[in-house]
Image (cartoon, rainbow, N blue to C red; front, side):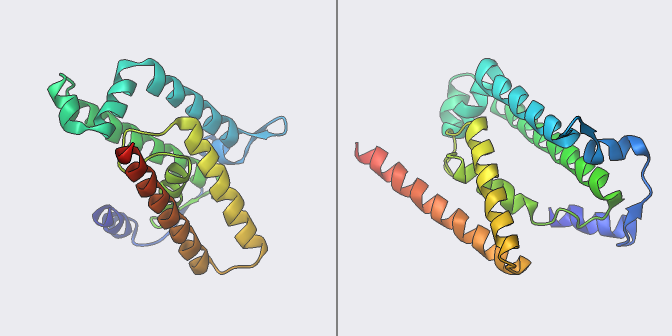
Length: 190
């Protein structure tokens, strides 16, 4: 990740790129009635990925690999192929998020969105996904994202500094992982 960020800084000369056409700004700035297009896009992605993960073989393979990669391989799942699909989808969604961000601010900067990966991890863990894999839902992640958004908004309203907000989110992740570890231990005892 640091290599990619470094290359992006070199390619752009560490300068923001601005003046994007209206088509790119549409996703970040426009509304359908009172609803932002970006919200509709996020909602569509949640629905599509819920269907993908729960109704397709590849989606079930993803859960199986997350639960136990070696068992999935022994059961005939092409683990490497599924992981390529997962990483490709992850990259595509990150690119889509980047387009929304560019559309909102009409500017692209290589370090824009830096730290959002921490919020994404926090949303997934808070949403009930296991840090050990194989457990979690799209809707749980949505709830986790809403909790993180409310937490960030509350911290902003309390005028908490951005660096301290990152510390708070980090503590929330640590607490969520600790609770996940406790949950895993209780399952093993049962």
